[in-house]
Structures are given as C-alpha cells and as structure tokens.
Length: 150
Image 1: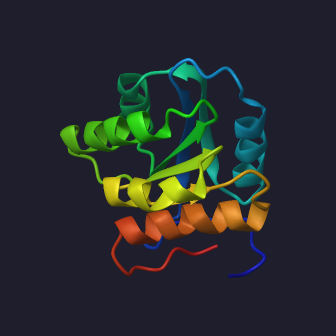
Image 2 (image 1 turned 120 degrees about the horizontal axis):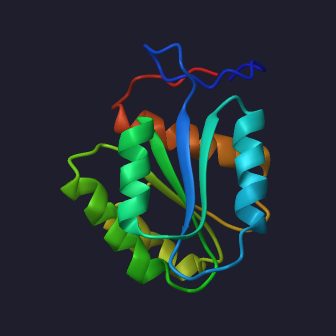
Image 3 (image 1 turned 90 degrees about the vertical axis):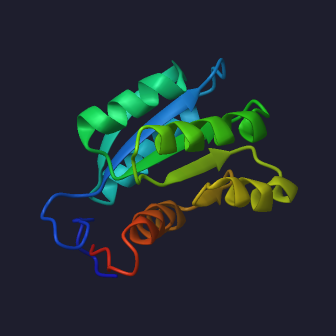
C-alpha cells in the first residue's frame, strides 16, 4: 500500500464506491458515520443510506450508484437473519458485489457469516487501516486476483 488517498480498483481511475447502510430497525448509526468518514479519508466514495434500510433499498442504491461493495452495520443481533437476506438479494439482482459487516457480532458467528457469503466482519474498535483493508480485500476478492490500488 502507498500513502496515496486514491483507493481505486485496478483498471479504473475511479475510487472504490461503498454503499453503507443499517438494515432493519436498528437505530444506532454513530459507528457507521465514523466508518463512512474512515472510508472517505481513505479515498473511497461513500454512498451513505443511513438508518432503517431494506434489502431492496440497498440493492437499488448499489445498482444506481454502480457500487463496488456493500457495508452494513449490525448492532441489534440481527446479523444471522439479515446477512443471508442481503447476500441472496445481491445474487438475485445478478450483482457481483461483496458484503462487509461491522458492529456487534459475536466471534462465534463470524465463520457462519462467511459461509453465508459475507466477505469480512469487523468488530467495534477496528482501526481505519483495518476497515480500509477489509473493504479493499473484499473488492479484490470480487475481482479475482486483480490488485486494488491505493
């Protein structure tokens, strides 16, 4: 990695585009706003949908914004119910967009989430570097082995 703020996908001059949202009735969005700033400061474009989104609104935003990755914040213990819904909605829409989850997720649930198709799970206190790298790795994984440049 370099110190450049540009977080572009290989073969593109545009930065990585991230849709951030809270699914369901979870009303805690402070952490998601912090993550939005971390990603923006890392040179990524952030499309912040905010609270009380549905899988349909997230997928519509991904399609309309030509997003590279979806970031979801989970603080209401709904991750095992909501994660498979968003992964299925991505698949049903014919999209190849990875999903990264952050928030209050027990370590015991991480492997199940990854088996469901979640690319990465971040926990409270994750550093800006860790958040940015998780998003880059998720995008890199969706591109095969193509590099993601900073």
